[in-house]
Image (cartoon, rainbow, N blue to C red; front, side, top):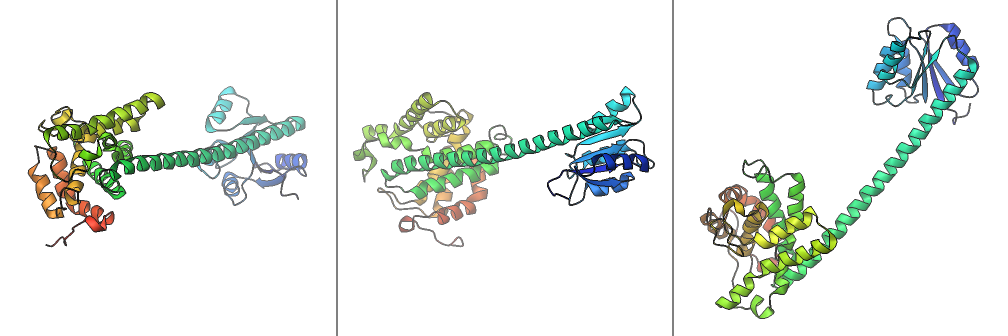
Length: 371
């Protein structure tokens, strides 16, 4: 018997109808029979399930409705089309069967042409549905692959742009990676905090992680004589340096206007513009205070300052982790959101671990944690 022939399971407790259906369908299909509900369920759930089930309604112990209910409740057999065989012709009986998941009825006594036609039709429909499901799965996989490719391309473009900006300030790509991981660490810790719950979830945390590298993209607009000056900036130079927040915001806004709005660009703009705002209102560029500062800016402020403290700059040597922690704790409620500082205090060992994992070896000082 050809393995390409569809399989049909015939379920009936009356030998007469079994013989009729076997004689009618044998040769064109691979047939198996069951004389009660338990046997039907066992054969339907086997390693070689049928492509169609012809199921008698009136059977002892377990009737066809119960068999159909159990078939549809089992993920292994839920998609096998069921055609009821019945002498009952009441509308309510048919409605009950369709509600249970049957696809059709064949009434007894059976007309051979009708049986052949219904079987052929429902096997063709099942095959078409199977082909469509496979096509959908292939399409979904291609969409997932394409989405991942686009996401990777976006990540590479973001990292390259941010790295160019950071390189002008004698910083490295590892500064970008560290601040990304710091901000995600803070976000994960704070997402259940009453003041942050409405702003932080898995999707927004992912946006923060992706957007963080662009926090200093505006530095490309600051002249080298200021950006690379090895000594303190004079008042005019400092005012120019502070404009990098606005430069970054404006550049991302122009990109949004040209390419269309997105959650990513909105978060990136918030970070670029507000990561130098202070909780007490003494920051720049707008002097925002407290919760008026977007969450993205508040978290980026702490992540950026911690990394700046422990990093070597052209104008300073790196602080130890312990000294950086002490400075940040002292700025609780002044420079930084108190809740963010509390989170940082709890997570400080993880901050140090991230800093060590993505360290710039030539410019870092990390004494053992016990010192």
